[in-house]
Length: 269
Image (cartoon, rainbow, N blue to C red; front, side, top):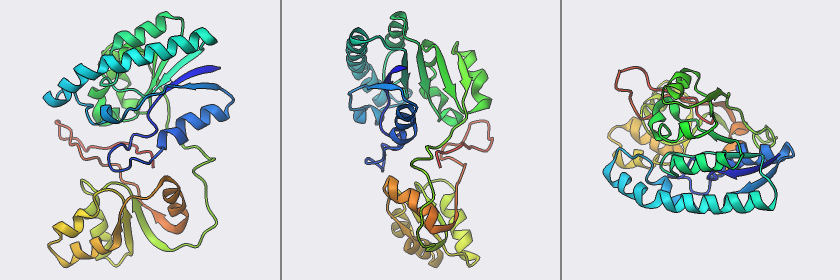
């Protein structure tokens, strides 16, 4: 298939600007399957800082910049389709990126449109406007399928997975008992401090763990700060799994649902 591919290299635009998570797990697998990919040449950076239209400052930015992205997208899709017909438009788009009319125009060219999005467990509102414009939406949160249908979208349940060519064991010494790689927020520091308190050698790497040192109020806080480090590169993260006897994964997120239910999601980890 000849696929027009439109996605940022990573969802980790905050704190991990060098990460290429989506490139590793979306672009490369499609290429490995033998598909001919035409990548959208665009810098998503400024858009990723303004994704929530409910915030007035974000709304103003979105209203001003969405048409610009849409114009570039249509130009590149039309040029690629004219050169040789496209079989599929595949994206990881938020509503803040592009107007629904642009996606519908791509569909009218005879190109099926598909959007992949994996944060709907607690941020469905970020794709709610654009989802109905696509022919199909790939959805890894099964309990959200009815929400997509409610707004007029056509969801397909699609379980998350990892690229085994990238995420694989490495033959390295086991250096750590328990590790966590990811951003510091929510209940994550409390879990790690509880492990340390019980005598477990728990370590952490990622954005904002340096705040632990600034906020430290108890000896336990200081101890967690001593055992925490900054962000790892994508390659270092993969190797860290092999350097650890136990790799932690937390499903709780920073946003608490209004109905009081436990917030959670299946993270890329």
